[in-house]
Length: 277
Image (cartoon, rainbow, N blue to C red; front, side):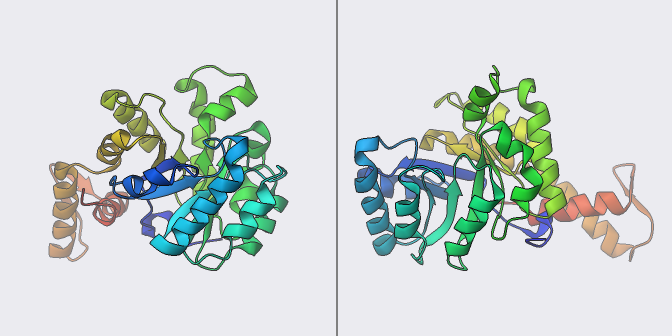
């Protein structure tokens, strides 16, 4: 097991991508309110600017603090240089590995990271999905990320809703069994459609996901709302725990419903996951 049980881990709800070749956007991304920022060296960066982007990210992390970084996939011509440039930097909170498929490549990357850095495999293919259990068991893997768009291409699928239900459920199940953090759902391409973003995020949350990848600052507020418990839910959780404490563990009820062990566990989880927006 890599970590304590999921319920004890407070992890980001939102991860905002920002292109590594756009240092003019770095400060804005970190001021956007996102729980985490991913400086991207992969898809968002043209081939001709890979080296420059790597230098910009390295410079930012050295001078400005902490960040997550998405490196180029293992086996690409840029991967080794990305890892060499970034793995020893104290400010690297975690490395996102795209096209994560083979546990051996993940173990090799994990061995090069500092103790303070985590590994976030991005599942984007059938091979990666088929190796979920082994990927979850790699040291330093904190949680899985689901690259829904690339996954659809690899599987020749259409649609991001019920079509991906099985795959999302399996990511959540594998994560829970391995006692790593709840998985992170893929991006919603609608940038300013708050209703769509909140719907997509709520569906992911209901399947056991705990975070979402974002491609624009305007998506963050909707993601946070969907992942946050309402005031009525928080109030209910506190009433449950007050009743439990008052009755010293004896059988009791709240709102006409029996309070048993699963209800108490849920109340504790809600209180522990109550973010302040």
